[in-house]
Length: 365
Image (cartoon, rainbow, N blue to C red; front, side, top):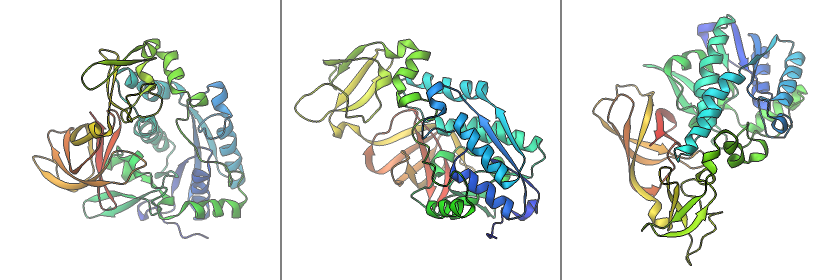
């Protein structure tokens, strides 16, 4: 038996496991069963967009529900599928499309965790009489003197703390992350040992609800105006090309601009009011500071009129860098880099760290 302890506060009580149909959540359920908890598996049906149901790399669609159901049967646990399509459409899909209209680049995975999974599903878990809800995320939950804290996963190559920055202290009290101390290779080995049908299943990739990964086409179906053509201009406002819609672009983009000035050009700004894309050299992307909104703070002190040293991560694929964090109100803050960095797009997340600990984060303005 694996040594799994998800909290003495719940003894060996009931645990709801959020099962996406992938190897991580399947192993999470198996570990909970093996450790003696009363386990209930739950899968959310979030969308049903034809080809997205069966393509590799999707999640929470038809094929994945079938995989989760088979794993639950193998483990001998009760299993439920909850239809959250309407909620997901409103909270995640429509928000995703609306963000592009504002010239932003959204991260729907974070919004999904923030709304559907760690709000709605967590409420359902409590209604099922569960003492805790476990997920297959690679993060660590560690109890400290001031309450429960969130830390990066031990396997930094799989660490998912960037996507969970909006998790509140109240939610952390109820959530459990059994894979936080493990490497992904160990997770797959465990699944293979148990003979789980998902042991070799590929990772979920890109945005799960986008068929063929064609973001612009998907957005056009919801908001045709997002694909209205406009001008590509340089830093002085001179028109140097045309585009097929601002939904095709994000800050920092280099490929697909279809303009040339003898040196590499990057997207510096997206102006939804004038429907134009501003391009320039890489140097123009360097910034010293930026602001965030909807601040979620997990530190041990009240963030009022203070400036503190942090490490900040503004892309899921990059490492945190040193910066200063200044709190400006209850839910906004300013971040100043110690050394200027490449700008990140509005709508992306900025997550604050103190070594391995997550201090919180916000959405870039």
